[in-house]
Length: 166
Image (cartoon, rainbow, N blue to C red):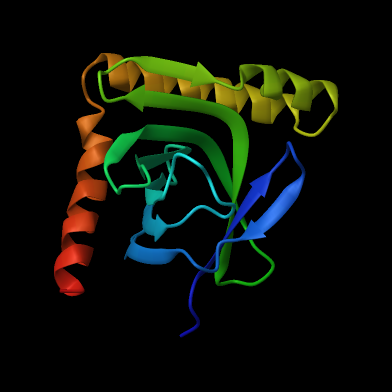
């Protein structure tokens, strides 16, 4: 059986990145959890663990600082498409991001990029509507106090991975 290949498609800037160094911790029907390091060096981040909730259109990432201390939760609005071969998936970043800080405050980012992508015809109106509806669903889940449902599989995968490498 061939290994699953994951790709990240960005619209701004326009790029397709093979996530070849990501370690897949969980592979289920509607859930993929990976451990990763940044593609480009970052001054404040060492890496993280991400859960792709495929049916929800959300990628939730637990981000760590340079000392491997928890920094914040970072949520991308995504859609997925079949890659060039049957064992590949492309996750398209639909630009809107939500950061949940340690103190519980929420920051919604890059809505201006979604508008720019529409203006430049980089995404369709349908994709923009999907991104906004997905953002709405995510925010409602957070405001209902149910974000833990998305955090728990990530935390469990981290524990399982840590105990498997000891």
